[in-house]
Image 1: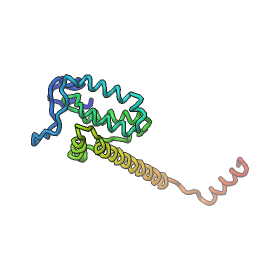
Image 2: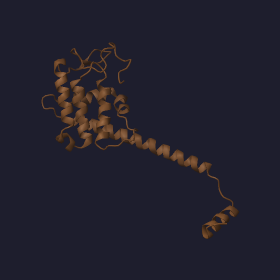
Image 3: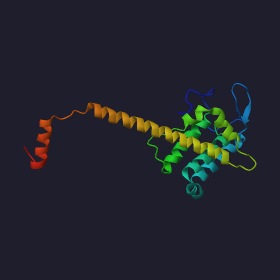
Image 4: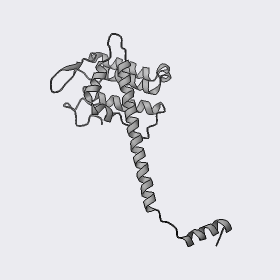
Length: 190
């Protein structure tokens, strides 16, 4: 579903990549990243799933665990295309399963898609020798924060619009009607 009608080869969706790929700028051809060999993808993906379900990962803050998962998933690059989309959907699922209930308002795509250069820059900023994810996680957490703030704005706007409509639709009682309501409240009947 994530890559429906978006891939050159109709056989690519839902299967591990069977060829070597690079992550590159479509216009300039500049290579951003060289993922692991395709032969290693099934094992690396199994290891990642095993890790995210481990007690160690469950002890981490859900946002940190989701950020680490996101980075590692796109680093493995298990599919020919759609890895970023898949990572963001899986991250949303991980957050939900770890008690981060978003009421389905939450979407990281808006933040990451709004500035692809910063997204790729944050991913590239990880030192492959030390695997220090600090800069990536700072970027990731900022994305979660911005996304949550957007949800808050939308909810506040929807709530205030609903209250406004309710107030505008409210009919004021006449003095006589208010006396009747007061009488019923005091006596229980007319």
